[in-house]
Image 1 (cartoon, rainbow, N blue to C red):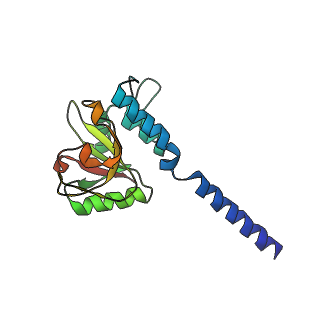
Image 2: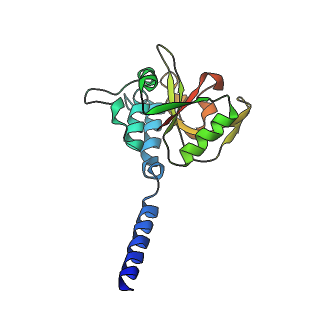
Image 3: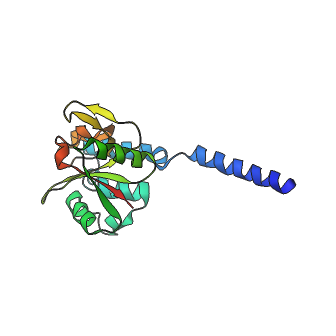
Length: 178
């Protein structure tokens, strides 16, 4: 009986500790918002340029996009995704079923990213957990995301619909980490 009581108390304490710590998103919300603000205000040289690589490392431990010298840029990350065994393409953001699936995966704790690839520039946003939001411009519900725009830093977002970053969902591919 005493052993069961001790085990129950330990389980309750562990659960309480996990709940107090929150999700990786909760623990990193301030950092993400600071990085987006630094990008918008152009106060930190690499806030916009290396945001996707640094955020993926901080949130999910993906160190392969940064080394001691520098982090990969969005087009370089996009190229790596196609060669990686760790990432799978879900489909285009113009498909509501794909968007719903991506949002569910992100809310379930999986790393999900939105990629608009281009040879010389591109954009990568990280899909955040939460509810979909209707986008008039997309004509469908869009997932929440965080992303820094190198071309227009003032358009960088935290916890807003991906439609604020990407104008055409047909040009955006959603990926999930396996």
